[in-house]
Image (cartoon, rainbow, N blue to C red; front, side, top):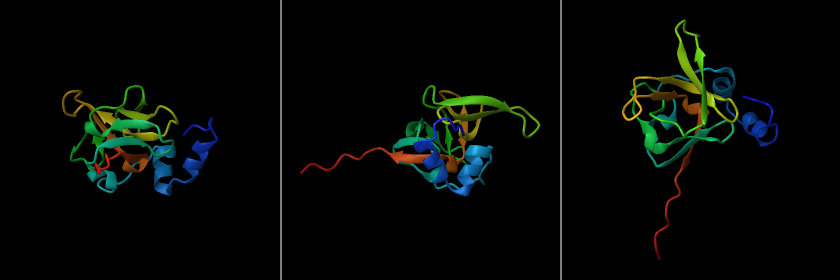
Length: 137
């Protein structure tokens, strides 16, 4: 993750779990089916665990069966991509556009309308549920 904004971002990074730090800062990967966010089904927004920047709307989340939270689209301009050859074949890796924290990889086997699967590490995200409307008196 970028260090140019040492204020609140540095504090949030210091508060990360060791596993989240490995994923976000060292481009690691969590074990499949290990994230509580894999089963999250409420309405809301998924934000970068490193800096709080919104990355995905819950309406784009779907069950890919892969073991990682998956989305068919991102919030426009909120992720950046690069080619990754770590497994010997080219893959498209994506990061938070604000802090550079590694999120996961994007593949071309997702559902309509985009046909994309953003396969995200759950520890790299934080879920912010949509505010519920209080009952009328």
